[in-house]
Image (cartoon, rainbow, N blue to C red):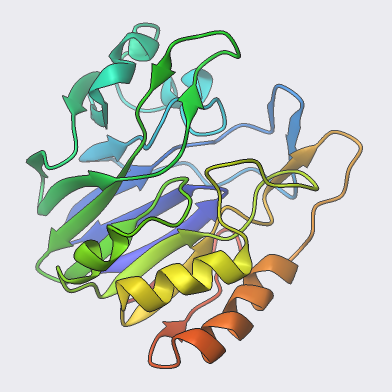
Length: 242
């Protein structure tokens, strides 16, 4: 299984000839957020898209329009209406739902992240996903705070966990993990490898991002709290095999 950190919460996961991407954010600017560095390389042909929740830096309609028409897009059932302006094929799921995308078995798992598409919009759900393929298993947390159910996700047996360790501004709102909280998550999940995501990619216009600081801080905390977990820090665009 090969994992490529495209940036923010966008990760490309490849195994046995199948490819999935998470929360695709492929543009230089989304609202008041500006991408640091160059744009990501064009995506390969995809067997599916996983969308964790409806916030605009995770479900970005213009980015989804860059993906081939009819590509399956897995997302929380409460958010299907947000897909109406895309040409993807929505596959609504709830916690506990399972489906197949190419070589991957996809299991929808809980997330603790309050979500509204717009400030006054309806509350919608957030999810994480566990992907299992011949080459291993990986947990994509999306955006989430710590929650006790992480131990049950860890009981599934994880080769890798993709854990958000920062946000896009100087502070974190509810439903997020800072580097230490993400390290606690790693201790509950017990993967062989933990890869920090949601850092070093976008920041508000006029504000520099925090660079590798959150990812390196996460690695330091994991060494203390979950010493059996190996941390692999990937810069945007870098890959590793798990």
